[in-house]
Amino acid sequence: MIFNGKSYKSTVVNKSSMLVSETFQVKAPFFVHANVEHWRELTLPTNISTLDQLEFYLDSLLKKVNKPVFFRLSGTVQNGQIHILNLPEGAMGEITGRRTSGTAELSACK
Image (cartoon, rainbow, N blue to C red; front, top):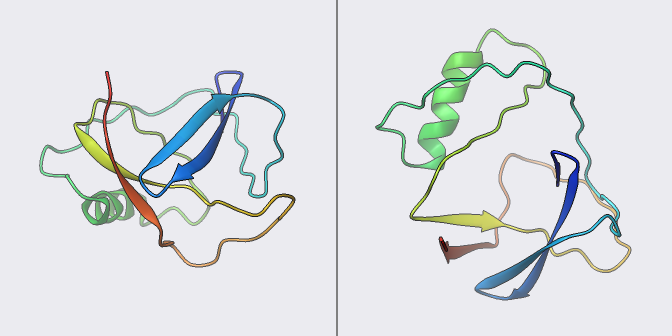
């Protein structure tokens, strides 16, 4: 991920942990790019607490939009799930479908 001019690489350490390092010494097997000059800021409804609820909410907001949409979430979480594609060295690939398996439960750290 590249955010605010910094590049981050996620690596699977074991079944329940990961390592995020700041480096540009990485290739992107999947790459999406956008330069959003003016983000439209919204407050999520308080009843959204799952990925399915978030997906339904975003679909309802964007049902008339017929092109890819970039969004980002900012906030504090108590816990969550993250998915890292742990590709073999040098592998390039393509994700098909909307969801992939292999999530890990991680607790938020301060």
